[in-house]
Image (cartoon, rainbow, N blue to C red; front, top):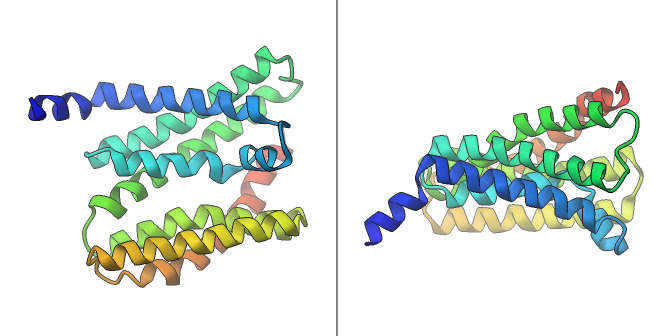
Length: 212
């Protein structure tokens, strides 16, 4: 019975449908929570709030290819859910389709990476586990840099940077306790990756959003 249950849970179609459905719900919920409180408004208007869930999903999925594909579909589903809710709320204005397309492409780039990272931290081997941990923390640290350096929201930036530093420390400790090779690379690479994420967001994503 245990074997049958596990095999059903890990069936590719079921996994991909579940991750896509969760993405749709996440996107709709994100839109619905906008403006409710200042804290929730910032938390839901956040790249890391969306994409970090793909790492969680990747850690829960047993097969690496499914974790990667699930990450991609979850992010596309999140974009569809968010902008569908926006259309229903009559706030899908001029340029909305282009903006949705840009975020979908960004999700197709980041979703598979974070899906892989979540899977690798939990189930991978060698130093790749530390690199994957740094990739997860990178998103929060990079957004913190973007909030501070690009938008000058230093109060919110400090919160994101503190959470990113805590996440880096927790991942490093987890990898050390799990006996991962070169676990310390997680703490070393996370700030560097966070800076790279910020530069990509500032130089590429902002440019694409500004063009639609």
